[in-house]
Image 1 (cartoon, rainbow, N blue to C red):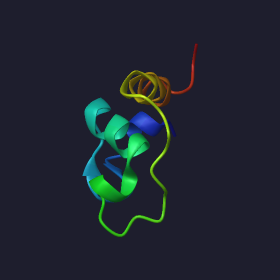
Image 2 (spheres, one colour):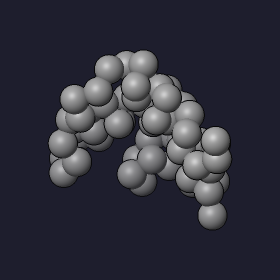
Image 3 (cartoon, rainbow, N blue to C red):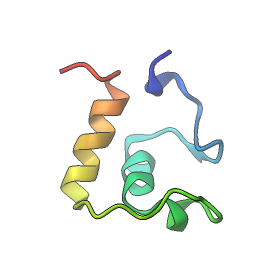
Length: 59
């Protein structure tokens, strides 16, 4: 199964590139109670990470 096939991010957010990038950067702000810490990445880095994950991890 690819990450892009998942319906919800963390069982909470619709799986879209925008939501995934926001979750990567600051999970507690996007899903209250999340135990994943906010990550010290830029918006651009989070967008790149989300694109990688959405693409199934292929280069």
